[in-house]
Length: 168
Ligand code: 6OG
Image (cartoon, rainbow, N blue to C red; front, side):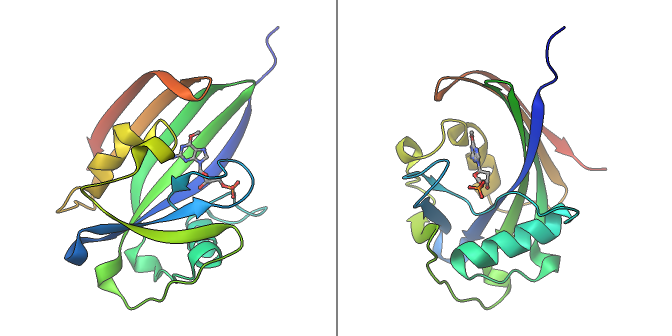
């Protein structure tokens, strides 16, 4: 029998600033995805709810304290093709125009703003170009949920399915 795949859950938070048409990413300075730009996020601690993980990881990695009411769920992305491991990413979107914040670099992430019109997709995970444009679109409907399934062949996506649901 095939061994059961190991499933790991992660949060991933996209910080958008519509008033300046920018997004705040972090350049990962160590570990998995080193050198790549990405949203903030990571693995929950034991028994930690995913939303709490999202708020904690964002604060740890870039100093932005997200008031929980401004953390909007944006769907889930599932990844296969990385050996016996399967990854589920719980995606969140935050509008930085909604609250005051300060940005602070961390040992793990160098926070960097990008114009929404020039996202550095060539320095990001290969899946991002498929789903990020939707998450960056304005106006954002809090009812929107992306469901993506991505299959990696090496570091490239070989096939994927992406749907956009309206949470009724
Ligand atoms: P740490 O374990 O370093 O959290 N992540 C990915 N993000 C995208 N866009 N694509 C991927 O394709 C990803 N794989 C992992 C999830 C890792 C962070 O990196 C994200 C977490 O936010 C493979 O703390």
